[in-house]
Image 1 (spheres, rainbow, N blue to C red):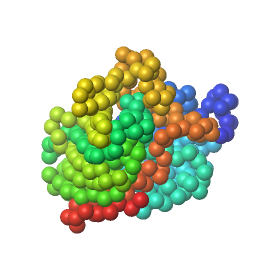
Image 2: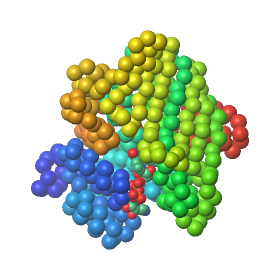
Image 3: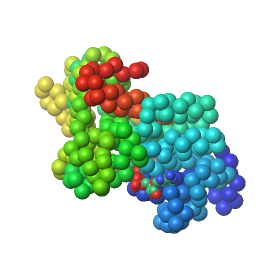
Image 4: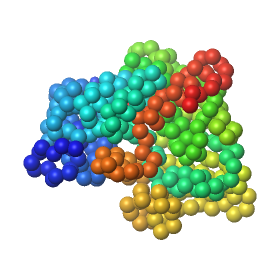
Length: 367
Ligand SMILES: NC(=O)c1ccc[n+]([C@@H]2O[C@H](COP(=O)([O-])OP(=O)(O)OC[C@H]3O[C@@H](n4cnc5c(N)ncnc54)[C@H](O)[C@@H]3O)[C@@H](O)[C@H]2O)c1
């Protein structure tokens, strides 16, 4: 890591953010919490970049490709529409920068594969914010499954439901396949869900059968080519059977990511809108476990910054993710950091969902 800005402490990580929307704010806040200095912000226009730099508290605005090459940026955070990720991440890796690239890493598995290989080659930290991994109770579930608490994995029931595209007048760049990619609901939020399934269960999805549905063929006066809803049946490596429903048209559901895992001994359930809790299901005496650094698994405890009863949520999970990225940049070993390889994995699963829906048959998912 270089340090050539005199009024930034030696060893301070210098963050550059591309994008000035929702996620740019979240990445800036998480970087600040992790002790980074936000040196530059770029968006698609010079005016937008100046406004975003001001509101995010950056030292300066920049043009995107200048930012990735800048001497006062150590880690490039890419928070732009999906179709721009591959080119920006490629440029950042070529400049030798550590990269945090938003999901989906790329809009095709082929492009994600190239990025994962380039990140390996560059030998830098290259991470994708599959941020739900950073809820302490998710780590608790993962640790309990890894130590055999639930017995043999039997089945998985999961969903990611939102409603912000329920009406025909609801629109966003994600509904434009040129900006969002050929998959919308699955790439946008299903990618989080399948990452979490494999992360918590500790085994991969090996085959799946999917149906997708597009409810409105037009939004914002242009044709829509990607899906609103995906329903997926899947099988994991040990033979567990799973169901996943992903929708951006589920009225009343805002960010309802749920994951329930059933084993031969007991079940576990996590709901991201109630992140302080983990349900432990038993034939007799089910329990609702509350987050508590005094009682959790070590990997869950390390992510807890406040005592029990002081609710932690999405922003805390994001801060923990960015803190882990920066620890990795400093050369520390961190457990469970989602990397470009995980971004590639989600892109492979997304393509398998689209292929299965198109062919109307089960497809094998490449390892
Ligand atoms: N990890 C998560 O929890 C999470 C949550 C929401 C969104 N995301 C991802 O974050 C990314 C951004 O989403 P958002 O909701 O912040 O979008 P947004 O629409 O709020 O912001 C996008 C920003 O990118 C800028 N931009 C567009 N094209 C650009 C270009 N070529 N160069 C530079 N800047 C450009 C725009 O000016 C805008 O400021 C998406 O890939 C999305 O999938 C991740």
